[in-house]
Image (cartoon, rainbow, N blue to C red; front, side, top):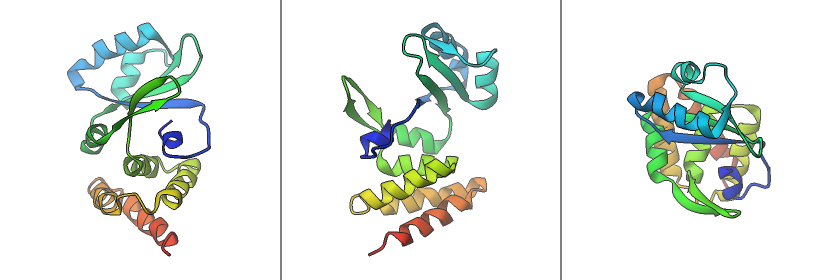
Length: 160
């Protein structure tokens, strides 16, 4: 949905939700979620503890929601930087375009790369390139230098 909020016309079939969660709160949080949503994994608490993500389905609408725990400094900072926006009749916090770009570069699926190119092309005059590059460089500390290098490449494509 953040992609749509930031101007993309592409629709999505699921919702990715990142929640600030302390490890000791896993069980209580999972129990709350599985009371409201249908878990798509047989042992939801075990799956969440193993992968820090829980695929769910909304009981009424059938929409898939992937809930992940914000355990990294980047994810927690993205939550702090998020802004409240309207979407239809709802209101929620959505990540900034810069953090959306970084989330998509971390995932690095084909559609994510298409989305990154589109976001940068559409928002090139308003995105904070300094924040993008500084934050992308930090991913090198966890052996993801590719994120910074790929970002440099894409930003280079959009000069001029």
